Amino acid sequence: MAASHSPNIFPDADAGLIDSLQLQEGIPSSMSAFLAEQEGSRILFDTGMGSEQSRLIPLLNFLGLKPADIDYLYLTHLHGDHIGGMMQGDEIVFPQTAVYLSQAEYDGWMQMPNEQNAQAVKTGEAYREQLHLFQFGDTLPGNVLPIDATGHTPGHTAYQIGQILIIGDLIHGAALQLEHPDICARFDMDKEQAIASRKKILQYARDNGLVIAGMHLPGPAFIRTGHSKEHR
Image (cartoon, rainbow, N blue to C red; front, side, top):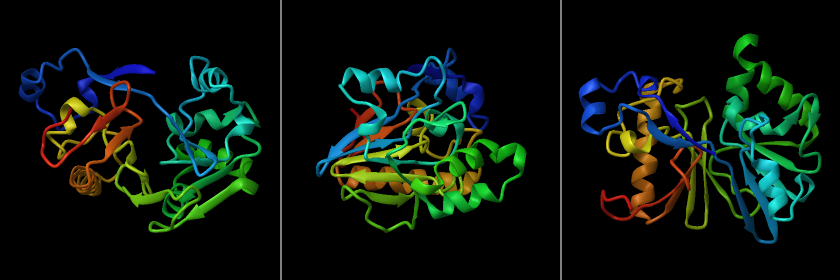
């Protein structure tokens, strides 16, 4: 879903930089989830907010798919705009889907105050029988590699599937953060760690010529990287 972020969500970006990049009216963004077919399985990465405007289920229907056709759901983290589509009221949307989440992310959220983690707790309880917690470095079904991208949240996870690197919320404003990775969005829980993860993973993508897919990259939410700083 196309969107834009207000420059105000980047408190570390001074007005001069925003003006020089002509981003005063907003920073192009999106709210995206990704579907992959790998080794005969269908894998969904995140689910969006699950609001009335969500296009997740209609787009699955367009592809001839139902939630029951999704074999695995890999979560980048537990913010509401990434897990909201897992529930419809008190009912789970993906009753036959195995859900994967990093142990660090689960543990971190379970220790937060109730006013902060209520949605995560409710969703986790609803999917208790389907939930699988992993360690960074494990290889997941579909030969998917989870990569430590902590900082945005306690166990924020990127996933590599072939030449695609799904980066979750590593970047909220590509027009700003690709060239200025030291700038954090106010949603990053641990700014120092978020910066380190952003730099490390972006460099890894460039070194390996990977295509990055981000939940808040501007549509179509893919950027091809290479061995230079140029982004196409």
